Length: 169
Image 1 (tube, rainbow, N blue to C red):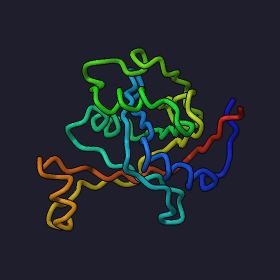
Image 2 (cartoon, rainbow, N blue to C red):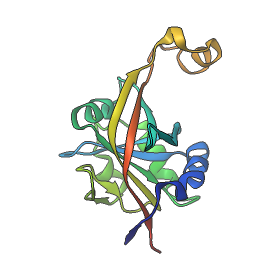
Image 3 (cartoon, one colour):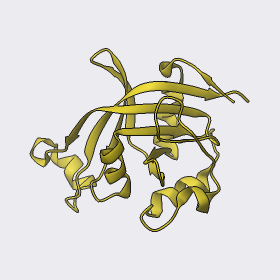
Image 4 (cartoon, one colour):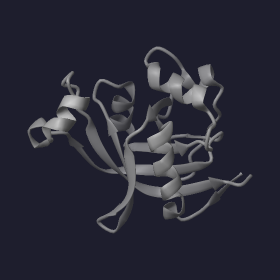
């Protein structure tokens, strides 16, 4: 069972998980896809609670987030789901059904039509308020050199957090 809690209560835990092993991003409705992300933030922008995610246009999740305008961010318990995070970060949802392959449990969203992962500890349901493809000319060269040698720049999404849930263990 998941309890609704203020989004900021899990912000520090979420940032630690992003930095350590990553968290799951779920996009799409009919055949939802799971992607591992290691970059993101919880913030307040325009007086809205926001989860910022970055998705490359070459990723399957990109077309799904563009189509549906919603996503969930799913934060595993500390030191859990490491195999699943690795799998979802190295396989494409174009080729495999990641829910089926990992055994992760999809649960219907409460405030969005995208499912969340019931095996995780913390869930954020988000609706896209803003999207912006990265402009390479505006990026510091040390970031470009380290992360964008391929020229595959991200699109940045600000998702309004419309639901925030903590698993009642």
